[in-house]
Image (cartoon, rainbow, N blue to C red; front, side, top):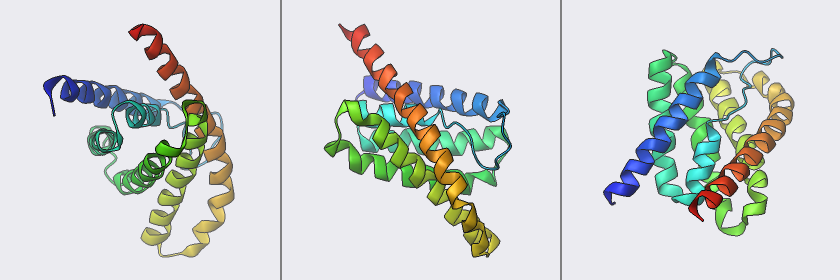
Length: 165
């Protein structure tokens, strides 16, 4: 890996951590436990699209670990890792069969996978399957937030293309 690529990855990691930490401080107008906008996922999706799945995975893992340590929320790390990694795997697998106009679809499906991963950890930690009744709420939230972050990623990619030309 060359220095330019490593520096770019470090920059994207820093941006995603900043977004993650700021987003953690924003109160949502609705009180649904475990639901947030997931704006830091814009950077993961952008990295999958521009750098590749391995690099995006590295950025994601560093962001989750350092972000949760800095935020002082180490217990949430299990939920973040399960959801984030499942989301990343699915979006990485979808990228070769999607075009840039379908990024929002990748994002929605990734958000659904993310919530499924978090729900699986919650069931495992609590030892009760009853938590799975929360899945429909998380599904609706994933569709909305996934669409939003997918659109943001599309705007970012289009803007970066304009900057290159």
